[in-house]
Length: 86
Image 1: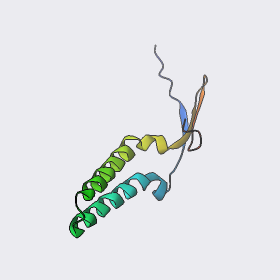
Image 2 (image 1 turned 180 degrees about the vertical axis):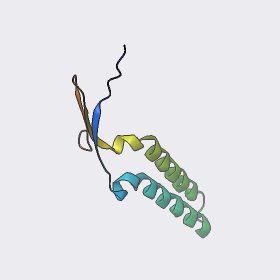
Image 3 (image 1 turned 90 degrees about the vertical axis):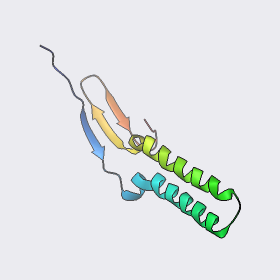
Image 4 (image 1 turned 90 degrees about the horizontal axis):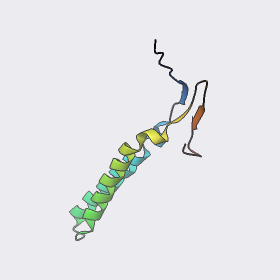
């Protein structure tokens, strides 16, 4: 008989700003690029748009690293917080 042993976990709920900061900043840079394009400031708008899309992508890719939790079982304790990042 195989027993699956799952770790118990306590997770801290993130506030809105910490959880969504990469998306907010990415949208800000995309908006800055659109405004720069509409004002006719040469090719610089493309850098803003690329920076915004990259920021949103990194925010989505690393979305789980912003979570804070403690999980444990009989063999180990895992702590993930914003200070240590582990």
